[in-house]
Amino acid sequence: MSVHKYRCGGALLALATILFAFPASAQELSGANTAWILTSTALVLFMTLPGLALFYGGLVQSKNVLSVLMHCFAIACLASVLWLVVVYSLAFDEGSSLVGGLGKVMLSGVSFDALSGDIPESVFFMFQMTFAIITPALIVGAYVERIKFSAVMLISALWLIVVYAPVCHWVWGGGWLAEMGVMDFAGGLVVHATAGTSAVVIVLILGPRAGYPTQLHPPHSPSMTMIGASMLWVGWFGFNAGSALAADGSAGMAMAVTHISAATASLVWIVIEWMKFGKPSLVGVVTGMVAGLATITPASGFVGPIGGLCIGLIGGLVCYWAVGLVKEKLKIDDSLDVFAVHGVGGILGTLAAAVFVTDGFGGAGLADGMTVGSQLGVQATGVVATVAWSAIATMVIVFVVKAICGLRVADDEMEIGLDLSYHGERDYNL
Image: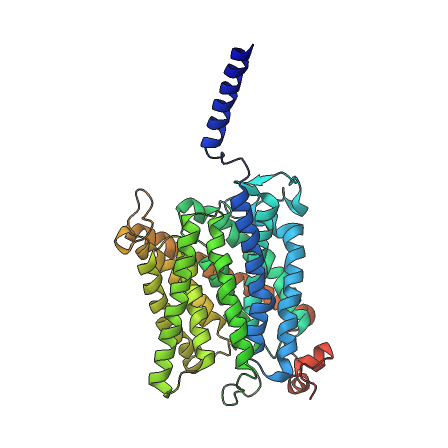
């Protein structure tokens, strides 16, 4: 009897050793990965609320700061509900190569124990929701101080359904760009190119602020902008490193190159301002930081430290030039430089990923059968398709909204400020 017990015990011990020695399969929940994506979800939401809201809020006149905060907060609420109702399904449900189906409307069929890879699908749903929240909120920076609140809400709702969901499906939901092998680790196309392109379209139809470009108003609170920018920098680790969807080496390297690119682009912006104006500005250094973050985003999971440094350098230089081109040469009142920083940065980083992913730059390497030239062709195809669809669809959306509720506030409302005229409040009661 004792020998039998010993043999059974030995067999159980061997079985336990086998079970614990091998990693869980792809269809088994990973506690470590789940914990990391839960954390990343909170970090990305933190980017919008309050990071982006404060970043933008500090850059406008004091009489409009609450309207900017209201836009960001209300869009977050609107995007969350729409994501549940239909946008998540259009982005990630199986459908055609152009758009997802309606099988996941209201999270239909997603149970408590349903998995997406090795994390709960509910966690994946929430993580991707935070991207859908921040993308239309980025566009806020282009049209501040002159747009009706009703127009903001209606444009954002239609934009999420018509622009964001299809492009997200193309790239991350198994659509036609994914099948081509496009590289967009965390949103150079899905987030930054869509938002930047749509921002330009909206402001061209909306028109500039009163007195632009001869009468310009300096940011009312650069310190508020810096606080918001710092929150964006911290939250961006969830944005980029979280997009690995695992607590692994890819996430670690994405975090490292994200930080390096942001720091490098900030220094580039300081040097340019110092040489051009004799004084580096706080608003300038944080704008450079955002440019570096936007540019590294699509490449973050594919490149190494050298790539992060080079992309930050290129992003700082090109985005600074783009700001001057849009505002000074083209006279477009993209108020807070959404296209020049996010649009140009996202497009630039998407193209740069094809080069800096290579082994020679310490990257993860190209896919089998791909060369730098062929991958660059895929990346360029993604850029052209994303920009074209975003521009055309946004133009239609804006004209529809203009016909329904109008776009531009009245001149006297603009003079009073949107805080009082549209929300009945003021931020500074002195």
